[in-house]
Length: 212
Image (tube, rainbow, N blue to C red; front, side, top):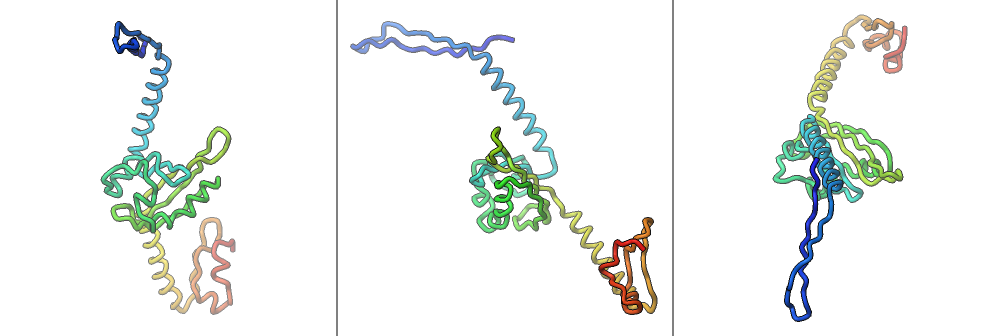
């Protein structure tokens, strides 16, 4: 590989202001150039990967200011510019920030945090799962927080449909004049109609999941 140099020209200025010549200073910056090139390639690789992950990836410092976001932040929320350099409150407003501040503070205190979030920001997914991980320096001190947000909308809708179906099933079976139960392959009770409680006094809630 070729060498890289930094060249600096410094004029010789006499007391009367005349410039009879100049000095040429040459510094070998090959190692620095290679290090900067490797860093740029590494950052480009990180950007290429994170920009194609189906979720939001970010890093915040201790002042709740974004230092990195992937491209989905702009796409999901139709932002006019990157949030980098701005705080969460500046990007999404004070109410949104206050809704997650306690969770961010937990991560800044050194704890890994995972929670579900109902999104109130226009353009984003309706239901999200948020994962905050502390960013530590070489001394173990927390200097920021990494964030991963994934879209949980389809899972939430599926769960809502299941719960609605279960409510409908219970409404029907609880009014039939018979005992109805469901036992899985491991002989654990997974469903009991209310008749079992009425006839035998069985604790429905406490029995679900227990073996026969």
